[in-house]
Image 1 (cartoon, rainbow, N blue to C red):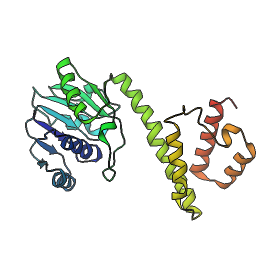
Image 2: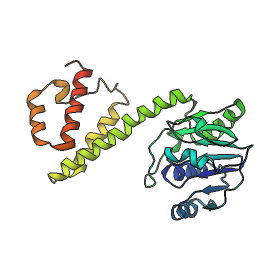
Image 3: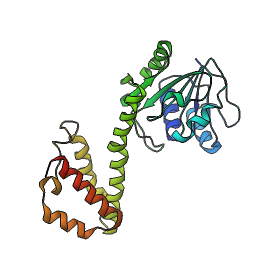
Image 4: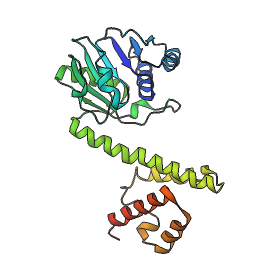
Amino acid sequence: MQIVIIGSGNVAYHMAKAFVLNNIPLTQIFGRNEKELNKISDELKIPFSTEKLEDADLYIICVSDNAVETVSKIITKKDSLVAHTSGSLPKEILAGEYRKSSFYPLQTFSKSKELEYSNIPFFIETENEEDKKTLFEIASKISKNVMESTHEKRKYIHLTAVFACNFVNHLFSRAKEISDSQEIPFNYFLPLIDETVQKIHEIDPKSAQTGPAVRNDKRILELHEQLLKDESLEIYKTMNHSIQKMYEL
């Protein structure tokens, strides 16, 4: 099978690397950013182009959600299978006359961070059983956790991921702003962060909640509010209100 990955960002890099490490041959990686494509090509020994899209049996589009539809129009091979990697878009966003699918890896990707690809859940959606079999076989070479998912279910998977990953990381960034403002090394908090994450491998997150909000410690809550301003104060109030509402305090 001839496979082409389209994109040059974080997802494209990690998908290409996962394929190469698991001996799934790639015909080409294609995109607009020649500098990034060249880096990927040098590391993974994959041919790249910014001009000519090679013929392939399978194209995997790894670009931002707002570019998927536009990028999908460059694929003109009608007997090909095309998959996007978006968690929130339907397969029907793909705008060509080919077989449409989604190939969604549930993970946060940064080029500078190594990943254990076998632990990444993959969610597959296709138009027919044969294409589903094809994508399951490919994903199963990479991961031990491959599932079928409708677009409706995948929307909620992605929404959950935003809460569990993107929002949490933003709170880490806000926390670091506070620690930096007082010249407190942020690495002091890494054992706490690690324990918080590790705990929910064993305990339901709701049962694992600690802190002044769940204790309804008004004195501490008021003290913290006096130390904050602007966006961090609003986030603090909103989070505490949500915690207290969840526990009916």
